[in-house]
Length: 479
Ligand SMILES: Nc1nc2c(ncn2[C@@H]2O[C@H](COP(=O)(O)OP(=O)(O)OP(=O)(O)O)[C@@H](O)[C@H]2O)c(=O)[nH]1
Image (cartoon, rainbow, N blue to C red):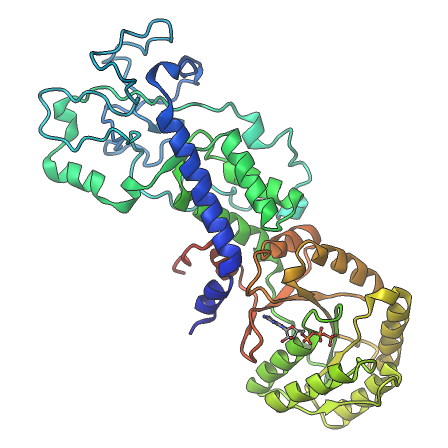
């Protein structure tokens, strides 16, 4: 099984939350729009005048040469050259014979029409064509845009979704001219695809607010959720989108935020390269060391591991088990002994054996932050006696199930250790996977790897596109 498939399966709890949440947002909005009676369209005349399609096809199919992704004018708007202007609320002509309120999307078909599947519950559809990421009218971000962190100007004031007037689509299709409808096959294809059936919802402030709340609920954090939502709104506001289109936009935006931090653990020529592994108790340090050791071994590197959490006999035993699995030696010291002394011995052995890597496990007792800080500082001091550049990496291991708490852990560990990169574990089985997006957005620290299970091969280098697609529940775009 590819790691993406595994990631997608295991991120199910997070992705199903976003997946179902977006479906609900779109479904709910569509219900509201469809319930809109004909005479409740007083906003229509206030909508900014959009460029109009040259034809009045109520399916909104663009004519040849027309831009494929029209904006708010997607809903069919009569050409003023051919049709009288839309009446205002007061000028509404009396309803035709039917005493029931007629949904706007169900005009009486002209008698000249060939039999047409009645669509009483169907809002006139925008073109079926899916919006490609970065399409001409819907760029997620301009090419060459500065990374998210570099954009302090992006505030609620200048957020496109707040600054831009919200053009309302005109839900009133005109009776179509038979000549403009094309042949039977054309119409069959227009209506045939699944996308034609998919519910759509107008992207407006209400919808964006719901989307923002959904992202916050998936642990993306308030600031990141606002930023992501504002970026998604760009170029899409006023358009009617399917949930698949929103998910695609969301995945694209998440991948864009994650791209700069997706960096594998850098390898240096130093022998041994010293990797200090820090994190709170239970975050997955031991497991991550075991998985990494196994992968480095698989890549032909020689590895030594030091069980630096000398305060917990169980932690040492667990590391020994992982060492056996990975086929690497694990150096231990008596319970309660000085971890710095063990680190020094491990450094001596790794050097004398010419090992490529030395990974040092540490305690994670945040309850006594001062002790932990001194302990880590001492480990660093002693290994620098052997190599002034050590440790070459200080990996902070975070548990995804802690959600927003992971942000606090980064802050604390950045103060007590020189954190150079992150590993996030336990992304399987949590609905809080969005926290990784918040971490990337807020700290910009490299994310080297993610863990999605307890097995030795359940750790993979972090891939932003895979992660974004798995988190949102979309398919991975072919490279
Ligand atoms: N589901 C899941 N469980 C994980 C993952 N990584 C680690 N675990 C489990 O989390 C628990 C704690 O992992 P450890 O590796 O012992 O964590 P630690 O940080 O070394 O903990 P201490 O030794 O107490 O400091 C263990 O039961 C692991 O099997 C993961 O990616 N997914």
